[in-house]
Length: 394
Image: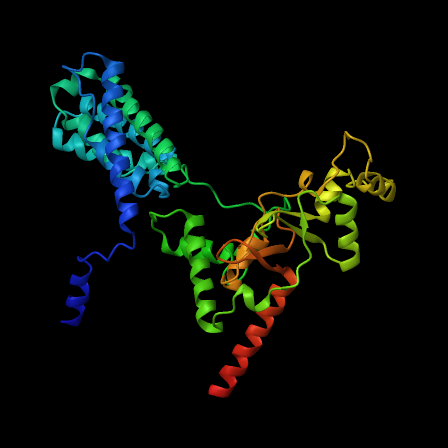
């Protein structure tokens, strides 16, 4: 009886963890997509009294493109390749197989096999194949023209709307692949290295042996974020305010390069936050900024180049940068004072951070600075404290 209850629970869907704003966004996107697709198709085709200007499977495609735009089943090649391939197979089956039910079954099954082979699985494409077979005399009369219009035409227009709408509403589309190493090596990004690794995930997916409606890198990111939440639960709330340096040496936009370099040398630091009069961070200047603008990547003449670059010109006009604001990195990557330290890991791996992150308060004013050394020390001591707690509890 218990097994039956568990089996029946499979018929009840889990609650969708999506807020109202996202649901409304998807609905509005589908409305705009279908409306625009229909209107543009009519405009291009002209007389649509004898041919359909909008086919039903586009409704299912709209669900994927606007409600789950990060899904592998909703990517550009999935909709274009899947729909046109299925339409071609469906038209062919309708021409060569006399019995409609048999033609429909063959069209759908062959479409699935072809989409697997072409890596363009798109569930609505199965309906496209059925439409080509069971759509009636009007569609049959089109022959292979049905593949181009309305199928390919509808798909391209809907895809264009999805690209514009999703990106305008801060849903990156097409879905970006996993980041590559910033050092141009085969290593995965640093924030993805702790816990499981790429080989572990590949092995599990191979054993699972089913198509997932989530991209591989999204799945890896979700699992990584789960580990981060688990870390917070186990180690407690250690935030930036607990580990940051509070007596921060700063400069302003108009600070002379010579003065900024001298501050770095005096305090033995590699970065200076650049602030305005309200102590809001407007940028950050690092040793890397000096090296880049002074052409110090080549070691030959290093000292001479540096002195020449930072030396004040004492003229009304200068061909080289004179103040911090001309070479600083802006905007600077910042962290809030109440941010958990585990969230610093992905920030520290960004190319323009250079292991120094200004910490700001709720009013975006500078209150401290966190370095890579601060983070490593906090993670180490947090782990030690956790192990001591476990030892005492046991």
